[in-house]
Image (cartoon, rainbow, N blue to C red):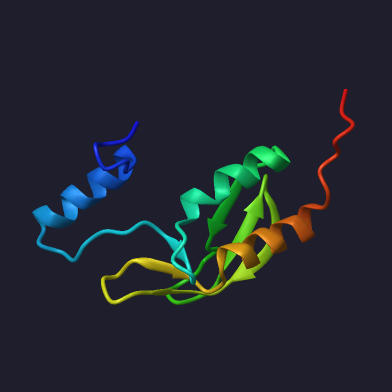
Length: 112
């Protein structure tokens, strides 16, 4: 569900908490080109019928995260925080999509 501005409920809640604590504006995790991860990941999950996760394993900031699909490690991605403390992954949305497709391979269109 979204608010009047079209922001998902979890975004609005994070924004509210940050305002309450007088923290800088909330923006969800995004790629280097400013595209939010939640605008790209669900389509790839549907296409490949796999759950994609950005995960850190015994990591400390700013260690790279690993992209995981249904428990399988696909590739690493660098990350940093912007001036407001929001997560930015160090590749574009297009590069992310290309790497996921390269790792997961073509989708079988001939399923019965």
